[in-house]
Each structure stands twice: as structure tokens, then as C-alpha cells.
Image 1 (cartoon, rainbow, N blue to C red):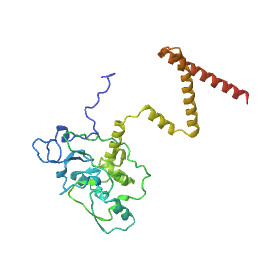
Image 2: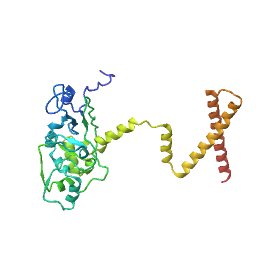
Image 3: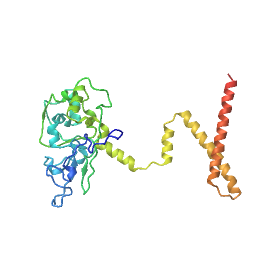
Image 4: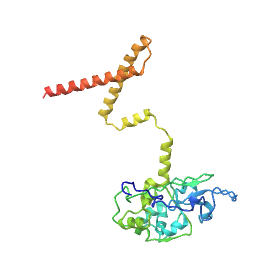
Length: 290
């Protein structure tokens, strides 16, 4: 109908809806917490499909230690995006690989030695991280001229029928050549090279939101962003304001009068008028000095 606003779609086509929306998780299609499951187990979220998995259903005989796993990609997603196996080589092995020092065969290690934890749940609640839509796949550094992925794939890498854990900072090692960017786009995983989408980034933002910043801290932060001359001018202005306000309020204390809101407004109004007068005088002096 003409003049009527277009009705929004009930679903965002960029969102992915899986069985989590029906309250079930993992390959076992069970709820969490599961009233019929007596096994104590943690739930870990896949950063690709965003489903939550029991630790015992990731294909490992024993889960890697917490300090070597930051983000997890489930078995299904590792099979679908199998090029990711090349990036599971530990940092030291990757460094040696680029200089040609490693052996021809590399056995995949699930994780590295950086500190961090995969997104997990150990209680009755879960909080899946919302996927951030990324319009453009750009790394902080300039795109590599050669394909880093092809260099990694020159070695024989044994793919395993398990999930994979990645150490903190692994996304910064993803190749950003044109071919790899096209792969990310074709497979619908453009977000992968966005480091602001990582579990660690979400944790940092969460801590920042949970820690309120006082006006005093905001003032110090603003002051630290100024140059030396601006800092001196601000501090002089603060000291002048403090001195004049003390003198103004002293009169009320001596006369035992209550300070009203109108009195404070009058003080700042007078202060602003004097400031404009000084500015006008300075401009006049500057004009006559020419």
C-alpha cells in the first residue's frame, strides 16, 4: 500500500538458526542442563556453527588443558572448512615452517601455549556469543602478497576426526591474500579474520562494561590524551575555577546563608561573562598590535 512503511522481515537472513533455539545442544541433541545425565561435563561453544558441545563429544580421549585452548571448532566444522587444520600447528612449529626448518610431516597439535580458555559453560546457564556481521574481511596488517596458507600446506598434515582448539591470537595468523579472502566469503565465514569477534575480545568488552568508570577517571583519561600545553592550560583553568568558587562560597559561610541552585547558576553565569569579556579584550589587543 502506498505511503505505508515496508514491513521488516521476521528473520535476519544473516543469522543462523540451529537446534539451540529449541533448547537442545551438541551432537547428542540433549538439553543443558540435562536432568537425565549424571555425568559432570562442561559445554564448549564452536565459534563457527555456534552450537554447544559436551567435552566428551568432541572426539578427544582427554580434553587439552585450559591454558592451551581459547577457541574451539567442532568436528563438523573442521571437516567442512578443512583448510583450518593448517593453522592448528603450534606457534613454534609455524615459525620454523616459514624458515624451512621443520620436518616434512607435522602431526596436528590441538592448541598452542598461549593463555586463554574456549567459550564454555559449566553450570545451568549458557550465553552464546552473537555473531557479528562483517562486511569486509581485512586484517590489521596489509594483505600478504604470497599465500601463507599454501606455505603451511606444503607439509603433510594429518587431519584428525576431532574438534580443534586454537590458541589466543591465532586469527591474526590467518592468510589475508585475495584467494583466501574469497574462500572465507564463499564459505560464509568472513567473520573469522575479525579479531574483535573472538572470545577474548568479548571477555575484554564484558569486563570493561562491568567496571564503571568514574568522572574522575574519565577526566584523567581525557587529560592524558592532551599535549603538554593543553594540559597546563586545563590545570590553570581548574585552579582558577577552584579559587574563585571557594571565594564565592566563603561569603555564604560567613553570612551563614544556604547555597541555592540559583546561586551556583549565577556564579557560572558571571564566570562565563568574564571569560567572554577577556576573550573580546584579547582579540582587540591582537588587532591593534598588527
